[in-house]
Length: 302
Image (tube, rainbow, N blue to C red; front, side, top):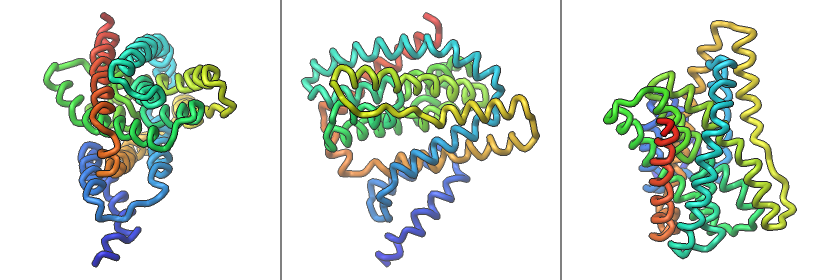
């Protein structure tokens, strides 16, 4: 029986099944199974999650008009820049207050400011962070991502927000792209705005990594998030060479978000939670609360 439960087939079958359930339930299922630790745990889980998420984002591009992408993205450059600069400053001060190791609070900070695990992976190399620092910072981000996916849709309904404001708020205040898209999926308008703006925010990985590279005198190469270019290409194709089946491609991209979030939840296990620790999670929560209020102020143009 144990061999059957631990078989690869069961895990991949569950990943496939999540295509047909909502992102919230997929995440919850992943968390429960990840913590229980009685299923097969693939060594390449982070890569599977990354490629599934990036594929979903690219396919979503087929459902967006390129003019809308440029309009939201151009406005988003300033919005994301303001949020990132303020959060980096606040995060640095909070790191000293919580007496965290500089590398650890830097990783949690960039994960909160830009795009969760992707930013942590990019910056960890140039600041020479060790495995424990990467694991803890990623754990903090993953746990708060899970909370965001349940919390933000409830706040959207409670405050009766407009779809545009909600989409901007999700993009500016939720760490990881998967959770941004999942939380913003309450309607098509918020989903489109959140996806475009979040990708604009993700592009700040490049200058921020260069900044950390210079300040740490690192020789590591900076990686460009190529999936964003493919997302733009998909939007261009759908706008200038229109076909009806593009809408089905976009719908499948939205479906792919559920397996991506299932794998996000699956990565949250007891070992990860134990490693995180009280001060790290406290720092992450306080910084995220600042991000939530700051993102809302920017979304409301206050």
